[in-house]
Image 1: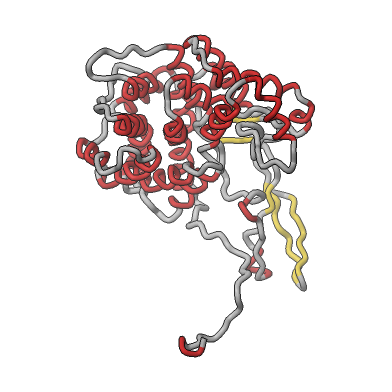
Image 2: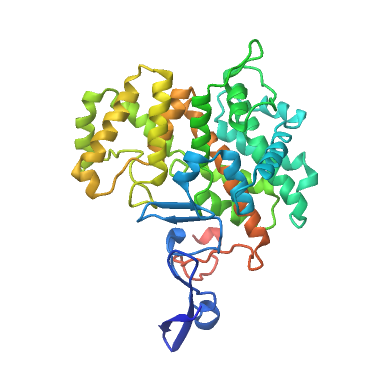
Length: 427
């Protein structure tokens, strides 16, 4: 506090407090605006509006900075594990060895889903999108776990948080297995969080499954890089749903539904489709020319970012991970050759440098997931799996916020003014 902004509207002159966070842009507090002047602010998409105060994630898009509880994302991705990042997001600090061991134990003991949930899957068509299944199944968890839906009980909130993080890999793997007609595999508590998910997805009951440590580490990094991203569309959806007092399972299902949109969670799938359309490295110049042509609707998917106007810090880690996975699997696929050449050109072409169209996290993650063996329909489901911890952390923070109230955005009405009803025979 300490400074203010002066706003004059008609006969009203209003002093609006200016609030400063620990880092980042200042915020003009407009909460008294309507009561004093009768006016609202107008901000489509809320791109200039701080909807909440949060201590979880900080982004500086111009500088290419992403911090979780103060820790740079590249340090976490290179040195930490997804389970450790989950603990950090939920609790505010990195765990000690004992705290991490206990957290791992708690998450591992919640990985199974209620046996009756198995029958839910048979109600979907075989070709149902995994995200459609996850929306339904996650929302239905509240019908099975009544002992963790009381949002006023801190203990129940913790249990619900652990259940959601633990069960999401099981639910996602089951969606994949159902689509390809293979039997579901129960979780194996002797494996890591990511190793267990890989086994449930790609293993079969007829033979043992051996987790490839390179693939396990790569997927762990992908999960870390997607764990939270401040007040994005799906996180804002979770918070808005939660502001009504909805149970946590319903709130996360709402987040999954929002993430499903191609402008949000579907970007890596679109990037891979583009690489497949290009097909061969020798066709890249043609598509580069199309991308530069303002009259051509073609756009390079997986380049640039709504927030980052610099190199996406997550993409630097993902670039290295993609190289490790492709080298490990020794795949002879022209799509990966296209990706590497397109990346090289984009990082050296003045047009892309000037417009800051750097490869983003979606460009690399689609390549890695495809190389591992995931179909493109699973990409957004994996995003939801990783983002669950961020949604849960943000939901918990919102519930505990004394200033929290039910969300109620305002509008600029542009429809007809009041008019009288005209009887049907007179129209």
